[in-house]
Length: 349
Ligand code: BMA
Image 1 (cartoon, helix red, strand yellow):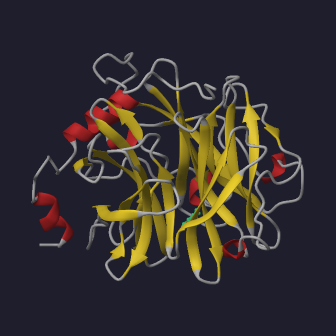
Image 2: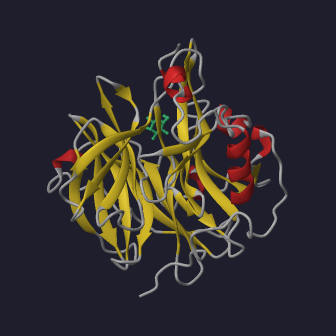
Image 3: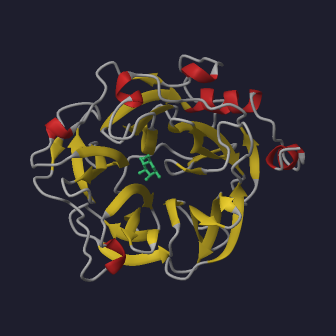
């Protein structure tokens, strides 16, 4: 089964169709003028809010968003919305598509959140990696599906405290690779772990550290959408959390990881490249949050449609160019292969 329309990978930024190119970090993505594209008012049943959706492009051309839906108890579940153009006329499941199942999976007693979806050609299935929430804190859970109707649940694959995880679409050196964000005494950094069977995980390594001090991504970072395989490396959007006197600001940065050794960071952007600016991003249940969990890539192999949660209250869309993201990263990155500059930045010296 060939279940997803993906660009022929890896994407070559030199041959990708030209997109309107900007080199300023602030305009790398263009917001859809009709944002937000999905809100509580679109839902076929009573909810509090809808945000942070995993994304898949289906065989029939539909874009599927597996949305985080918060009910009016405060618990989240996942619900699928499908659209032919990925913008409007969403067909939303009439009940939760993937509800929490705390009886069989006690790690889901307070709900499930923030799915990241990867189509895995070898398995001919989508891997849905999501946050399961219970007394021990957030953990990382996995389910496989062919159709977003029935799911094979693997349960917790990374114990609390851990979240912001996605599977890479193919094995690296014979092993599956998961990027995730445990919180340890070392801090809230991005890690990679490897597995022969998606159940047993090891080879844990930090791949990107939260910076310190005044940086926009000081102290807490995490993976956003699943990394994009390009000929230059795994292009990765991550969030950085700035703590301020009036709360946190969630902004987005870019990093590039080695294709064959994804624990090696080749480049990391200095500044954030997308952050809360509009009313629907600056105000909501949690203000000043942009939080993508997935994207689609158009047939030109360059246009990226980024779906993001806005202020934990709605889903919005912004469009960019993979080639522009890569060239911005090249021009605005402190880190080159083997450089120790990043280490001194991380240690604050
Ligand atoms: C993070 C996650 C996201 C949420 C964000 C802002 O820790 O829980 O689901 O959007 O906080 O509240």
